[in-house]
Image (cartoon, rainbow, N blue to C red; front, side, top):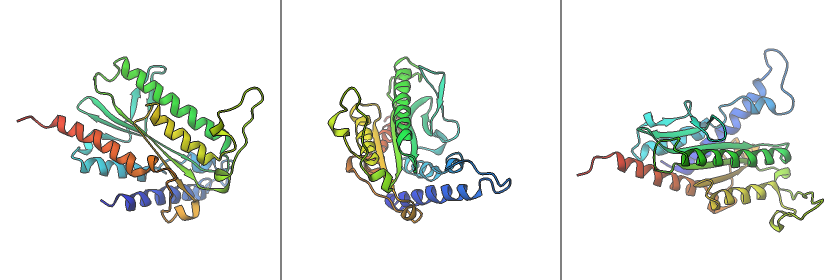
Length: 243
């Protein structure tokens, strides 16, 4: 499989589905959701990524029966359960789970904070549930986080931070939302909240043709996939009878 070509196809699917949903929503009633909400609530935008990861995992020797994009509910510790985006369960063992997220303008401010809080909470909840035996196995599940950010003037321009009482860490001063996501994803992995993170920037016009950028090689799609494949190979080997 040509991974980069398939990644471009997933990017194209994301933008084309999003655009189509925006055009179709409200066509029957004449009423549209305010702003871009119609494109956010339509779903299916990231199906291209789900299919890509399913193919990659299947190529490693794991049957699709173990891959779930619909029945993805996992128990939590601070809440009863959460629906993840993609889950790999092999013979009763949670092998891997992935969260796919996107952030498209025009609003990058409050939505950035929401994405951060959500990702931190999801990881903390999952890891604590694992520690408390929710998944019935001693093998820690692989957890991944993938973000598609619209490459836009507003996501690339420096943003000031309010500091009424205390100074923020210097690396956050006057940086763009794209750079904030870069730092965020990097620290998710360094703090071991996620085993791998991927940050993809894609302008809408070029994205409709499959165009994207990877601002940080440590957060590249290849690194993300390589990390996941290592965990999948271990699961495949454990299924094979010895001798």
